[in-house]
Each structure stands twice: as structure tokens, then as C-alpha cells.
Length: 178
Image (cartoon, rainbow, N blue to C red):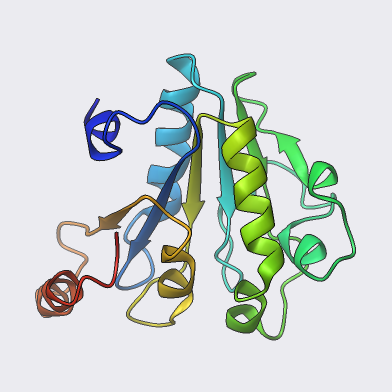
């Protein structure tokens, strides 16, 4: 319900970025569960495994990483239609895995093909969830934020260091994330 209002009641093509400060805070867990909840509510949803360094989405859904993925698409080695796979959880929930781990993840995310993919996904899906790497460790989430409508910044009780709250507040003051 809150996502509905955060997205200004937009009904189709909502892009939500999930990030955090450090590894292990639960971004992938939340992406999977939020995706399942949205799919169960009747919304056509897709999760993009855009943590190109330490992907967790396919693994946590017990899906094989045998099909072409985002890196294949971004390197122009696969068509956008060929990288989508069913989640196996619900008919309304699809997933795009990373594919082979690249040596240049940040540079790959700056490719214009990601813009084309997101624009196409906006027309095909109600909700697009992007699982990104921790923002205080690498800049990938900032690179992706330009394509997103809102950001869910994950912190975890007894895990996230209190000093990270200053970093998060600075991001907010500088309006670096939607």
C-alpha cells in the first residue's frame, strides 16, 4: 500500500530500487518477498538481479543461472526477451538474473542498453524491482538511481552500523536517490 503512494499512485511501470550501506542487510530477501507480495496481489512484477558483484536473487529462489542474463543483454549478446525467466513462485512474478559476472560492473551499468531495457519493462510490467549492491561499498546504485522512481534503503537491526545513518542522511540531504 505504501509503495502505491510513494509512486504517486502510478499504476504501471513503477521502478523501485533496493539498496543498503553494507552487505547482509537484506536487500535480496526484501526484493524477493516484496516481488512475491506484489505478484500475489495481481500485479505483474519482475525482479532485476543488478548486483553484478554478489548476486543472490536466483540463488535464493533456487533458480538455475543457466539462461542468458543482464550482462549478456548489456554486452549485446542476448535479446531482452531471452533473459526473462519465471520465478517459479507465482505466474505474475518473473526474474532477470545477472548472467556471467562481469569484470567491469559499474561501467556496464552506464550502457544505454539498460535504459532501453527499463523503458521496455515499464510497458510490460506493473512493478520492476531492482536489487542493487550496497551503496556505501560501490556506486552501482547511484548509477541505477537515474532510472528509478523511488529507492528503498534497507537497514537491519543489530547489523547496520549506526555510523551508516550519517551516510544515509547525507544521501538524503544531497538528494542523490529518488
